[in-house]
Length: 409
Ligand code: DSN
Image (cartoon, rainbow, N blue to C red; front, side):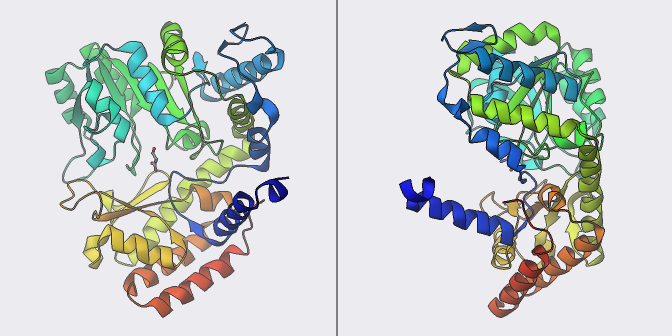
């Protein structure tokens, strides 16, 4: 037992469990997995090496591991409607690198969304492996609407002639038109790739349009709206399957994390159940309700609302910086993250915005009524951001509210 073998780690896990129970989790990329997913992650499957793929391994003793991986593959394909799935990627960043490595040459051109407009580090930021090894060129959002402008993206694609066009974002509150992206890619002879890490759960729950069947290659993490273990998968059209598999192993990775692959299989089964679609739709309903309440309270949201699980708020209009807002909310046990907003004049360390989302609180069972209450907490905390007593009172109100929505651990 951990408690007897390592009291320090056991105690830290106990405290983190308590923190998760007693705080309002609004980081849009976080969620609470089921006990079944956690059980699979904590299983003896972690003990086994299995380089290779089902039926073709470099180590003996993989009879059951093969079945686990095969189940995960079949479930991923069925869940997303994909022709091919590789369930071995360790996490989102390796999955993206594996796609670039599989389908491109060093310094080939990729067109992707600018991190400052909502993209991701692995979508070609200059400090990241992606930006250092491939020739990225970026599109952003329109300055007036703060939304993607597909005509403008098409013009960049025609001019730049990239080998791969990447759609997907980590801080974009609106629907992404994957069909439009694929059409642009086809017109310029590029491979189309979508990174749906943030919205995978919405996609399978039909609360956001799917990148399938249009997109050539799709990566996703499995722990955000999809509510599985901290990991990732790559899916693609059959014609790219062999190259993708080779890039994952032996190209970039060694032994697959079999306990995590099992947990991914569990998560895919959970996401196929009818109640998952209800959950996915409720995430969006909650985000819209929270956005409406915040806007009614006078806050400025990027794009003036949301279509998905995520809200990006410009807090400078309320006289704060993103860092100040994050800290004030944290003192009230409301957990979000500071974030740049499109055309931000401030630095990423203390940007103009905060990013919030509803996947985790929806897992706890919250609905429209609670969104009104949460907007009220946020409003009070930001208006009283220097008043420690006021923040402490909100914290105790948050704790009281959360008692009605217990976590299963
Ligand atoms: N860190 C994730 C997020 O918060 O969006 C992306 O990798």
